[in-house]
Image (cartoon, rainbow over all chains, first blue to last red; front, side, top):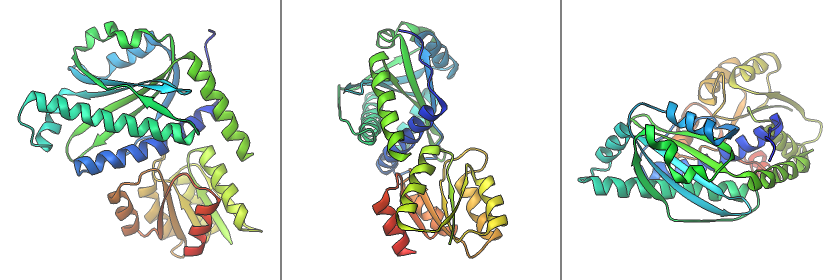
Amino acid sequence: MNSIILTEDEKDVLQELMNVAYGNATAVIAEMLDAFASLSIPNIKVMQVSELMERFNQLKDSSYFFSTQAFMGEFNGESAFFIDEESANNLAKHLELESIEDLDDAILELTNVLTSSLTTRLAQEMDTEVSFALPSISKVPLNEIANVDTFLQYSQVIVIDTDLNFEDQMIHGKIFILTKDESIQWLRERIHTILEALI
Amino acid sequence: MKYLVTDDSKLARLSLVKSLKTHVQDAEIFQATNGAEAVEIVKEHKPDIVFLDLTMPVMDGYEALPKILEAYPNAKIVVISADIQEKAKEKVIALGAQLHVQKPINADKMQDILDIL
């Protein structure tokens, strides 16, 4: 498949839909953690997986917990949530967790709630439905992240990345939504339908 | 009546303007893409109602809100945001906004907003 270039209008629509979806998901997480999160503007880019791996490598030098959750439907792909070790420890402190197992469980639950509410709302804004696979969690040194199977199935992806930022608790995370070629085409058609309805 | 629609997203501005025009005829509608532009437009045109997004580049809604009221205290500010956390709502009301409404806006929601104002 040829490289896809999103127009400014297409990016704008996707960014705004993501903004609405992320606001919704953040409110759910904020309530769950009893904390206030600041929202950032999502970045939208179509990229090759090799470029995505570089992006992951730039995140930080320390180990990250990362968890992923696949979603299926007309709009399908995978969401990935990254939280660095310091933030994970701060999360454990904030939730008064006592063991590493509890922390893994908390990150899984956080991922589940965050990515499923985010993707569900995003799908809802695009007038479609998605279903989910169970999230999985790994703790991977970043120099090994390129070997993670889950990302290698993609060739070209739309990457929507945004930050989860609880400043007072010093908990910061990064969320990526990855969609594959066929879903990108579907997404573009949907975006055009949304735009045409407004003009 | 004069209205100012402030959002960095063209989609959000288009949809808000369309909803507004459903209910208001002969409206003078200005548009800004960030808080700093909004403050300048408020100084020059003194809009009666300002629709203000929160998460924007250059100057966000939290920073722009008091500056808008300082420039034109009679402006009624309606925050239109995806940030629906209770603390975000409390914060903008404390800063002087009349309303906090969840995105996206459609004609029904706009009717409710105009009724309240």
